[in-house]
Figure 1: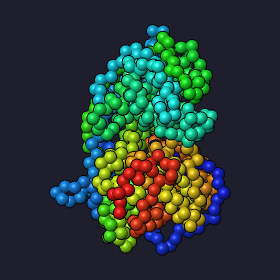
Figure 2: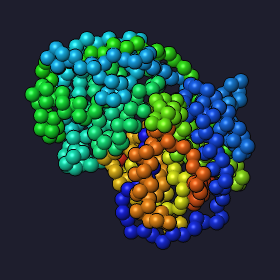
Figure 3: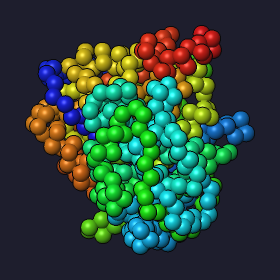
Figure 4: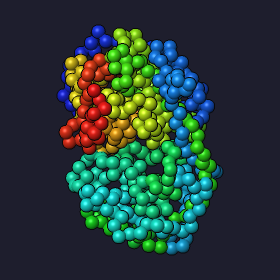
Length: 550
């Protein structure tokens, strides 16, 4: 999940044309590719569906046509166009039976309405919980280095935890978690993992739009369909049996019925020393079967081999997948087409390969990586980063494109998160030279840095970023950009309405993509190795592999 447009006001720089000596990106080809990838024929590009097969065939054909060579798995001494990605696929059979009992009286919960339960990913084939106690665990954080443990002095075995989304600092902007900027402790993925480590039977994350940075429709559409995970040796070490979200109104009512004040307890949870609180005389029950099996999805990999240093690699990435087929919207549409998210980034990747193939051969190799299962938790990029086809130590950088704006030209741009690095500095300098202002992530509390495909590389030390389109539009300014971004998030993001529109000009992408080409090309034709900032948690990891770089 990610942000389409930035949302802060800045002093706009004068707009200048991108340098003419770089490649030209064709709006017509971008439009044709986005339209094709987001058509109903591709069925929402769900992993392990007929839509995946069509997507792989289409993207591979386009990469071939663009002039790239296969860069995937080795077979009989030759590279394939794909990298096999084994995934655990889990789905709930039928309609789950879900309820909460208050003083012994059960209250049924409707999947997708008050609650969104994910298919079990701990290996369970049947989930059957009967009147399991509920415990409020604040923000569900155990951070020894910050002297913070929301699970202190509570045994969670055989219990269901209830946790707030984001960090304890979100509402106040100050505290032990760096203020508004979300840490990894604020991500729902961490909260489920920590609940598993604590031995909890499950975790219910309380949804609130502001700290989650998206509405309930996104939660429902993302969590009530088929789920995927990388194949793990011990899935129960990171997944409790029940992983779910609940509406804030339900949480408030449950607290009230237990004689507790939700808002007062939330404030207490924002302070060190918070103690978990049991919801007296309340329990959770669940009964549903799970269809779980290991399937194989695919990352798509194209490559331009370097002329002098072929073993050193610059990676451009984008995710090809979306949500596939799911619950119908008000118009009865069940196909989640994913035009902006992320047919735009995939089209950009194809056209970037075309630009490199028609330019002088780079000194270092350039890889074009279209990953699977981003919408299921960044799984394709995580798999590649954990089992790289080309060593991470000699991977120069990763430049990711996700949910680009297919409309008009903007005077500014941003990135997902604002982690300091030489890579980001270089992009900012290129933007400035072309009249483009850089805006630091205006919503660091949303944790965008942890929500894009660059993250799997970053946490392993590789300098990486995800590019974001700007909001200060040449036609309409910030007011128009803000309105478009808000409209997309509310009405289209992770909904069937994210469909291709004939009115899209793709002028903004044509304007911006040469900057990303210049960034990668300069790296691919240099001996430089960008590094993370001096205070970055990733710098030490990168330094540890320095001896492997010439």
